[in-house]
Image (cartoon, rainbow, N blue to C red; front, side, top):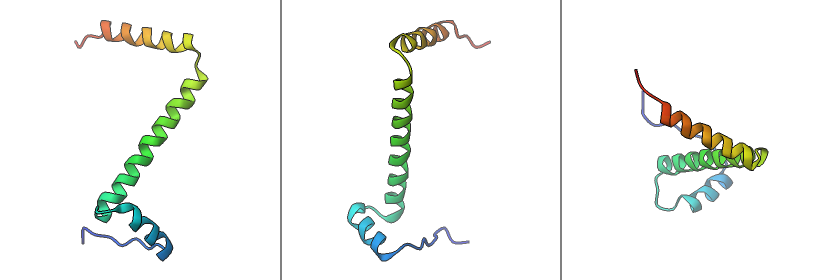
Length: 75
């Protein structure tokens, strides 16, 4: 089995992507897009969560986290 695969896309999409990929090969470029997408989704999720919580909630979470870290012991 070959370690390469073919992905069928329209010429229009390929032309747009080729402008963005610069000097990277396709594997590097597609991994970059994937990693950037994941990073932005995590950031978006974090911001949504942050907007749902009050300052008091955030402080309590922080306090609880610090207490857990202080008391955590491996047996």
